[in-house]
Image (cartoon, rainbow, N blue to C red):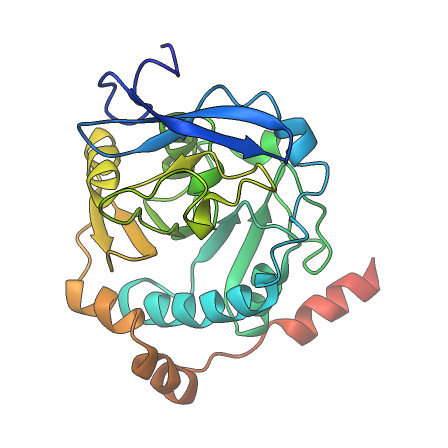
Length: 264
């Protein structure tokens, strides 16, 4: 399918949506789907250069985002999933989120094909191990969906690993901002190439027979099984996070992991 002519989500014919200066030197065309509102770039030939530094230097919110997402994820798992199962963080970056979740007592693993694992060494999955035989209760993918060259193919791989995907990506405002006028386009680092609406996520969910739960801002869950809407809403509400921290604590895996690493 011609990426520049057709929407990567619903396959309707795209419309030109403007140009932006990516990496401060590439004049890149952007396209918008009139049916679902999804915005995508032209074929992103600049990605090798963009990922020469996997975590962009402009991403100064990396630490606070991982701390915040670990709290939300702990709440969601405690309210809606089996906390004793295994979990995987897809596009796990430096491994900080996996380390935080393991420190909190959750058996999390990391997968990332671009970034070095600095904080969760020993808990990596490589491409060879990403098979249908792997079984995880939940897959997380924070600030990943806006990076995907082929969203449907990538989601297909995700749901082979787990029947539920909890992820973050900021929803496009309505009306869609002009290219360069919205902070989430972040043209300077060149890694954001796909921008969703709630409608585009609904269509993506339907293609894989998944249910969509969303706060209509930045947090979303795709699940094969029905999840309590109340549980999702509570898990993504700041007041509940404090209660989870107080009453649903688990035994940390930190000392066990440290012993395992020392024994190697």
